[in-house]
Length: 282
Image 1 (tube, one colour):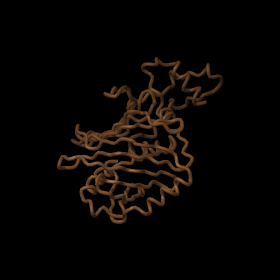
Image 2 (cartoon, one colour):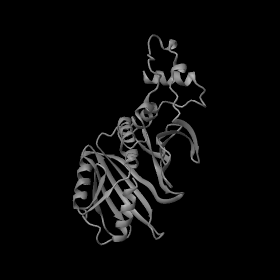
Image 3 (cartoon, one colour):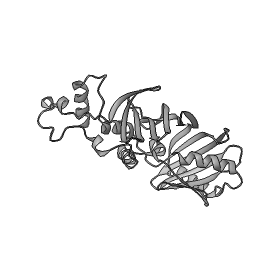
Image 4 (cartoon, rainbow, N blue to C red):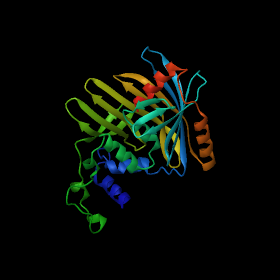
């Protein structure tokens, strides 16, 4: 039924101006992900420190039905440190905690369904329930599809628009806005994935941008490159090195490595500062 509706909408509207429903956008991007077991994502992060120097951190993430676990390896330190996420708090080893500003960066890679990512957007006020509505109140799909008056009943929302970013055309959804704050998520117009997540709070402008959708897993694609920009300046640059599904034996090996990893960053204070910066912004 959803495919029939989507096809009729495309026919009813000028293809250039047509903005698909947010619900359809989310389904197209996330519902092709079929994570049978755990999924491992390996990142290489470059993090800008307050003194203007860049540091490098390798991050391995395991996402499965037991939650999300991490292994971090600061470049040049020889350390492999374990961590985990509980609600919105990262644990680094056994003695450090970092509060997450947002979980949308992680959810963009680990969400296994459109519902999971939708709920994350709503919880963080990047999306409102009413923006999921496709048709005006009282409209019902009855009779033969040819008789449906879809064009005049389609609900076009002022908070959902087409926006041209330097990386290409996007569908912008403003979930929250007041005189000093604004939260916007941008989807690729071709429905390849999330292109940008942006916060404006007072004079501060923060955004995660995503590009190069070339990492395939099952029938979906993931961005290879990501960058966090603060007030016009890159402070984190991330690249996906590997992304794969794990079978039960590989998952067991991963957990064994995680349990044996170091529980402290005490011997690498510079690495702790960079890791805190990385985690707090996502």
